[in-house]
Each structure stands twice: as structure tokens, then as C-alpha cells.
Length: 146
Image (cartoon, rainbow, N blue to C red; front, top):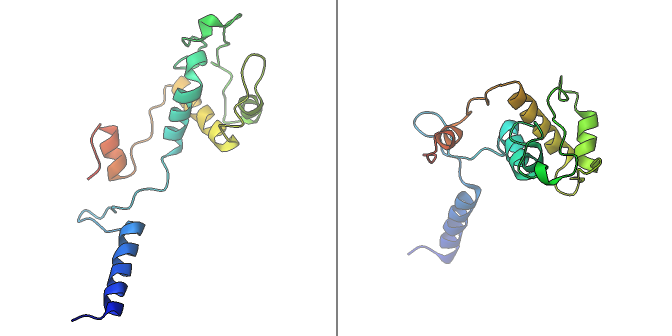
């Protein structure tokens, strides 16, 4: 009969393996361990959808559903997001300007840059980058990772 010490050791080892998610290589060489965070493009898209499109519109043209309710409307962002030099625009997102509220409590500077890069890519008609792992591929196809 195994000792209490042996059983506790086995239980601890199993607990650690389960809680860490024990990265196991699948036959195709991919790992079952999830990535640490989604790609920047996806983060930018998600934040744009959560906080920006209502006023600025899906592609930044100032034609979002809330824009009509604002006196003077919302300016188009076309032509204003160039070359990845986003410092001034990050400040606008963080501090606000005119009728635009400040988002520094909800969105940090890095995520502000992700939003701007997403919008720049969208305005330039660029496609999102291809998925990097099996889970991303499954998510992009509307399925579940295996």
C-alpha cells in the first residue's frame, strides 16, 4: 500500500501539471499551450469595435451611428493616420480632444497604437495577418481549436 507521502507527492505533481496546462506537443508539432496574448491586429480590432466605431464608423470616416447625434459630426480619420507616426494621435486617444473623451483610464498607450495600426491597415485595405497557430486558424474559421 502506498504511503501517505507518496500519494501526496503524486497528487501535487498532478495538480501542478493540470494548473500549468502542461504543454503537450501534438503529433503535428504544435503545442496545446495557448499563446500568451492575441496578435496586435486582433487587439486593435477588438478595441476599435468596443470604443471607437460608434462615432468614427467602421472604417474611420466619421459615419458611425452615434455621429449623427453629435453637433458638428465626427471628423473623418482618412489621410490622418500615416507612416506609423502615431504619437500625436495616441495623445488624442489618451487625453481626448474637443468632444472626444479621454480613454486613458481604459486604454493604455500600447493599445492606442494597436488601434491606430488596425485603422491604418483597414483604411489602406490591408488584410489581417494570417493566423499563427492552430487555435487562431480555428477561430478565424469560426470553429474551435483542437
